Length: 242
Ligand SMILES: C[S@@+](CC[C@H](N)C(=O)[O-])C[C@H]1O[C@@H](n2cnc3c(N)ncnc32)[C@H](O)[C@@H]1O
Image 1 (tube, helix red, strand yellow):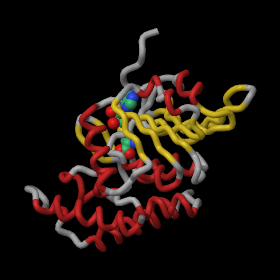
Image 2: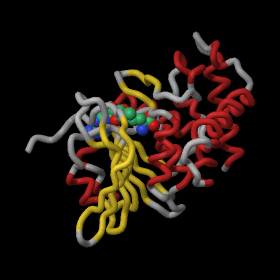
Image 3: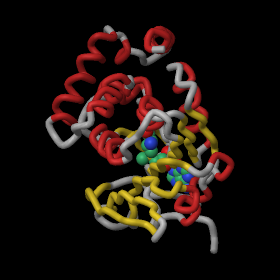
């Protein structure tokens, strides 16, 4: 699998390097690898990302191939980056923090809301059995689908739709990750989480200075909530009318 992915990666790089504005891509793959290793050491390991599985996944996924060409040289910096249509790919540390909080296992079925570039879905796919991811903007969903397929991720399904409703056909989920911020935890997502399951979700208004990243565990008595970091995500749009 790993060699297929390396081949696919080489093809993506080769094709992209043929196009206009490809200056940022005419780098040796080893240079991107070195950037990614530095990102893992300096931004993740040096903070509180301790899970070897998460660190390995962050080392394997070629983040620069999920970043638009104009931003590609900055792929491994300690910041979110624009991906078009006023949306962003999250800061590597936040991706790793949320992934670590979900305590993923190889057999898990995971729902992600907010596909964006597809990068977080790829990280989840490295660690879980099957990932279902929903993106409200069709152009981003299409691009993410293409990137993930080119890299050989066969355990990710991308759907264009409204994440407030979840993806009931594949529920219940062992884990749910939300990467856009709603005002409140959507009821459909709570309903689609397994008993004992975990959800990572930023909650709060986009007009405030930040939202709160919550880790929720569903148990028979209700939801246990752990508040973690202050974060700043793009708002979750398309709230259904009551
Ligand atoms: C911060 S970006 C996600 C980054 C993404 N996980 C990645 O790895 O690139 C948030 C995404 O959520 C999407 N989004 C916002 N509201 C949504 C909704 N109701 N359902 C699904 N996606 C939504 C946005 O269009 C945007 O692409």
